[in-house]
Image (cartoon, rainbow, N blue to C red):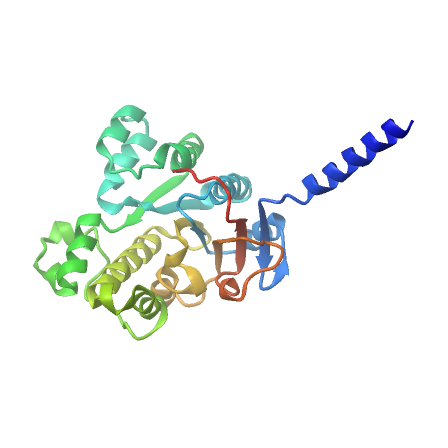
Length: 285
């Protein structure tokens, strides 16, 4: 009998500890929230920005869940876009979504991220199977690269075709405000150059441009991007709101903490909802 009691005590103690092993929590402001609260808020939005850690499996799982759940509500009024696909690959992306080319050819010719198969292919496949429009929103990386070296001025020398894959010039940019100032401060004097932040800004402006170009009133545009591009309603959101002010925008951001039982001060107010993931979470690449 004593042995049975001891076994039961050990079992229940282990069970209690196991129940406390939570991989993530969702916060709104500093208060514990839920996935259902995210979904409810997103249903009524015009634009939803899901800011991810690119190698975080929890973020990628929730991205897929949110896509499928929003589709059940919005159907043909749902549009999806992502930083991970560049504007000059829109044609080949459309050809794949419309079954004009196969998956092998698409992966061979599109400039896909190294974690495409694990993290973004499920999103593309769902949109393909459900006939959901998917927009390649980001600037071609070669143009962001030359901005990082030579500034915005180099863009004026590009051809008309090249400029069609970029936000309208000139770019409204101020390095003394918002995320670009923070970026330069975080990099430190040794590594920071004004053009590095400009390269980030041209990405943000271009993504906002293609989001708005494909948006129609009554749609819900769900956009996936690194969290830095939308944290604090800055980056892409700043450029979007400058063009279209009276819209509802929901920003979701992903952070990692050693202790997820409460949100750290630095992570508060980064988004309307914050997905707080334990730091030792396995990475996707």
